Length: 84
Picture 1 (tube, rainbow, N blue to C red):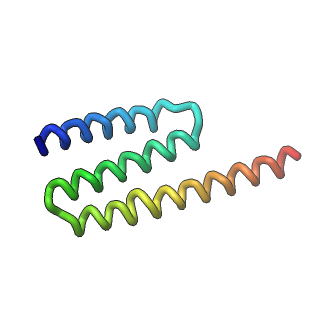
Picture 2 (picture 1 turned 90 degrees about the vertical axis):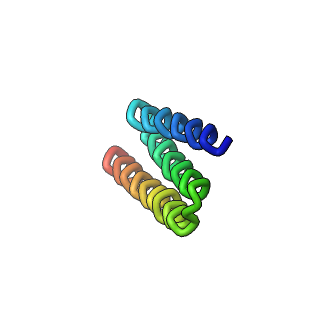
């Protein structure tokens, strides 16, 4: 049963990767990339590696997504100032 869950999560990760690449919205791509990291941390937890899962959740999913969202908001604000 655990193997089935890992395979399903892997398929969802691949679908999220394609979504991150082909989405028109940059915000949607950032969120899809965060989902990939979050699902990777769940897989690590299922594979009995809780330390790696916590690190991936904190750094890969949490911090990286927040940094990307912050950079996205700064670029959007600068672009609005240049046009306005």
